[in-house]
Image 1 (cartoon, protein in one colour):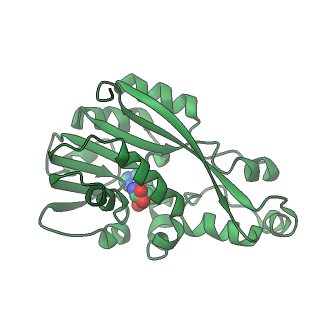
Image 2 (tube, helix red, strand yellow):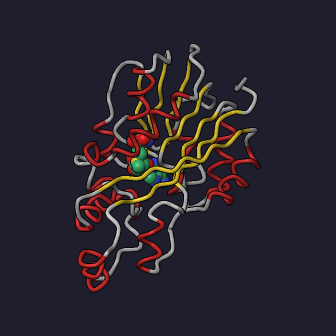
Amino acid sequence: MRVALEFSRYASQYNSRNIIQAKVAQKLLSLVPKRDYSRVIDIGCGRGEVHRNLIDQGIPFAHLTAMDISKPMLHLHPSGESIIKIEADFNSSDFIKALPYSHYDLLLSSSALQWSQALESTLAALAALCDECYFAIFTSETFRSLQLYTNTASPIYDEEILKEKIGQHFDVQFETVRYKLNFDTPYQMLRYIKESGASGGRQRLGYKELKRVIENYPYKYLEFEVLYASPRSKKQ
Ligand SMILES: C[S@@+](CC[C@H](N)C(=O)[O-])C[C@H]1O[C@@H](n2cnc3c(N)ncnc32)[C@H](O)[C@@H]1O
């Protein structure tokens, strides 16, 4: 629930803070073949970056289930006759019961599954929902330099674990992409982490440590690492 609270708290600011997530959704959707899809589901939809890219990149769909744990995020997601918004938690063992359909022909999840606390069961449930799944998941290399500097461990999965677990359920190919985001000051960098929900409400630094980062942190950028998974057989 900490993750949901963090996203809900900053839902209204999220759009101006989600520069990297916007790039990630754009790339994820660029991997999707432009066919007609009848039922699409977006897991951890937020305010609709995936929906925006379905439209912008000309990927036709008849129905979209937009699922998220955060009510304020869902509230900000576009509405429409072809969209059903579902408030559900992918950590819960029976979240698929909350969905309007038991099977989808396209499943997308961008920048959300790093917060799965039960990766095995979440992935098993997603595999039962759809055969054609596209994931973009942040890895533990995200914020690497800051974590080294503050001697903190990443709260999210590393690339190898993600590949292993995803590979157990899906026949996919992987691509890992690194991004860098520059800031004028370490303070702005820390604000970004807070307001983008990227900390997931975990691993907060104490006052002394925050002060040390603000005053002495030697870098003016954050690193992000994203693992993309897309169906192997769909690529030529
Ligand atoms: C970084 S945002 C990404 C949102 C959107 N997919 C995008 O690309 O901008 C992560 C989203 O995952 C949602 N989320 C986190 N944990 C979740 C959970 N356990 N079940 C469902 N959604 C969750 C958050 O509420 C948030 O909207």
